[in-house]
Amino acid sequence: MNYDLIDLKLFAAIAEERNLSRGAARVHLAPSSASHRLARLESNLQAALFERHARGLQLTRAGEALLGHTRRIFANLEQMHADISPFARGLWAQVSLYGNTNAINCFLPEDLGGFLVAHPQVRVTMKEMTSPEICRSVIQGEAEIGVVAGEVPQEALTAFPYRQDRIVLVSTPDHPVTAHARVRIGEVLDQPFVMLHAGSAFHTGVMNYVAASGGRLDVRIEVRSFEAVLRMASAGVGLGLVPRSTTERIRSVRPFAVVDVDEPWAGRDLSIIVRRDSRLSPHAQALVDALRHADGAALSRSAHDEQGSSL
Image (cartoon, rainbow, N blue to C red; front, side):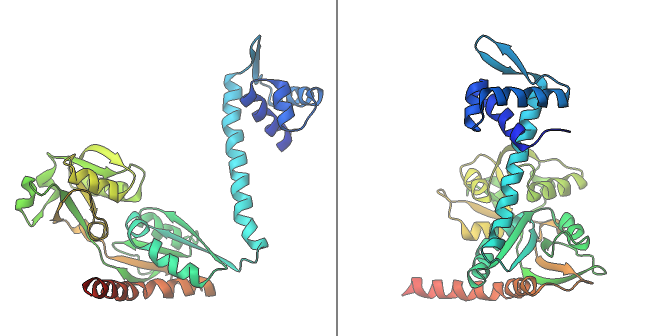
């Protein structure tokens, strides 16, 4: 089709200004040139993009659809420039790392921080997925490194231990569920729940596990972080499901109780995975090595912090 990025930028400016002259001025074009470009764009698309009214221009439905696509095109262009610009500044390598919600929220930020400080010319692209999706992505070569929970296809992937964690219930200290040291999820399905938001790998995984057992969670509210789940649960909004590491790292405004979930899927032993038949780049291998030793470094920091707090 015979139009270019300038035409799309002009169209977006006119749509936002609802005026051809003001839109043309925003992209530094004369009104006559802008009018010609807009007419050519509508001709190429074979659709009217604006309705002309006394108060200005109004988008047609075709125009509304095009505006959405145009904004995404320019957002993708900005991301493209952001991804490429580090190479002009001397970036040596880019490493792709996919992790589940537990790893990304509880462990990877601190562990990656230390690695990136030590390797300032390495960029890490991180994406959140469910563990099965991460395994498939690493097998297919979409990601160099994954951090997952649960079983790993040993014939295609090499796995290294990373961290140990477990999904637990959190509630107010006086909730009836706290009379038990551990509960089956089926025993609390009559209770309202606070959950991490739909679309997160954690939410998808838990809901699938519960559905596979024939149950359904009564999700009263969804929030954007494990900390928010913990705060809501401690306020009595509902029972929360979070990794145990969250309860150890985050101090809620109110006291809360922790009860183990007695289900096979509640175990969250995390593994670092790489494709068995591929050779990692030196920087990806360095990241794998750093993550494999991160648990020991974290324990050392924790012991040091405890010693310091007792002085």
